[in-house]
Length: 194
Image (tube, rainbow, N blue to C red; front, side):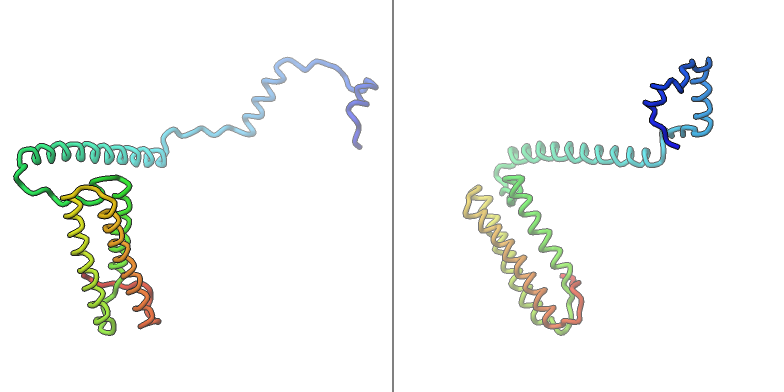
């Protein structure tokens, strides 16, 4: 039977007695006994593993930072001492971090597609033709890199290098499509050792 608490207070049916001494302490003791709090483990294996990962990441980053810093200083000293020697061929990454990302993306995609090519007797002739085209493009890329090293950074050379990489990647995509059309039952994973 539900009653409105406001009505009970109006009619003085609720007593206004004080609670007994130590009532709250006994209540909290009973509550802790019924629902004990779990003690936190300070070092679980997950915390240790996370700490190891962080330490390894920081040490790897520091190692690479100091390694590249020393290499730059050594190479600058070597260049100053051996000015008569030819300069090493520069790539897009030597001029800009953004260009390095573009170059790395295309080279990684090209290598991935090459790793998927599977050499079979049925596609031998087609593969040889594409490989020859890729070798011609690779030679042109090297020639453009030499030109970039000699003349410095200019928009035409950079665009030609990027277009060369795009063309190589598109050739590999076209090769993959033709291999799939030649043998539709074969999977898309194509592999060859070049």
